Figure (spheres, rainbow, N blue to C red):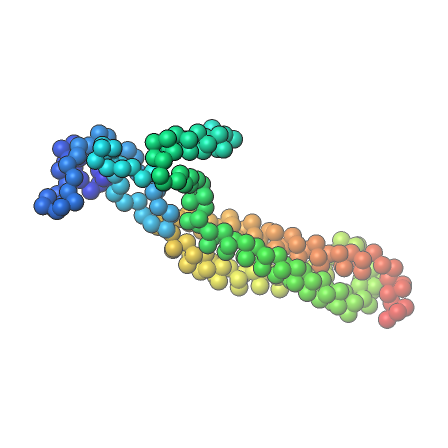
Length: 239
């Protein structure tokens, strides 16, 4: 980002046009190197200019110390740092912070949203499956005589199942197509909160549609299968 805002000569010379040279907070420094852009804030914000200042400990006290350690040695490392810190600064207490906890805190709202959305999705699927199962049971019971007549005339079990599924699954298809624009709009609105975000791919809706149709087909086919294998003579006699 620095190389996009200033020329190579200005960076090497430490000359940044626009800076107030008479400011009381002006610090003389030289540039040791330039690193690639990295996200020092959350993905809500764009990557901006950032600088690491290495100052003399005689003039400035460093408030943070970054430590990289091997996995599984956190307690050992913190104990060693605490002892070293206490020997140098006996007054203030050592306060450790973990970078992964700070990163997780930046996206805590997304984690809560994911949890709430997940539970609501489970409840919604259970309600939809229960309703679809009840409606398919009612539809099959209402067409019992028709099923019996078709089987007497030589219809196979598979043909009866396809016939019953066709009438119910078409409404599932209509509902899914009507839900796509609302889902697409909601995902776009949520992704707009991030400075860097992915695009909504078509395969997400395709995979969702396959899952929806698979669940609906299994739910409906269960009742249809029982109706299809039933003895047509009993069905016509009861009617």
